[in-house]
Image (cartoon, rainbow, N blue to C red):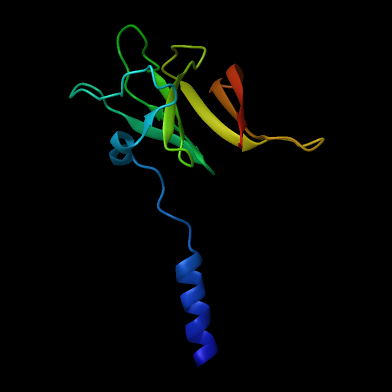
Length: 129
């Protein structure tokens, strides 16, 4: 009985922390100190489009000028964010974060890719440091 209780306790204690949400965004700061903090307006409709490990991508809303919306890359480990260019304004833009193929030791742990259908519109290495 004690082993079962201990096993349940360990699972509960080691469970991953809650995922990043838009409500967490005001607690984060811009990557560069010279940038003003982002405050979403009532017209913005920010959503977390993808999250993997210590990174999340937020689409902060679509507009007539850019139907695909604008994006922020959030580093949940550092509690920072920065604007990131999706390379397109297509309303069909999607983002993915996948582990990098490691051919040698390095700090590039993931790749952020923006897609329109099967075409890549932008790709960025994400680093763990």
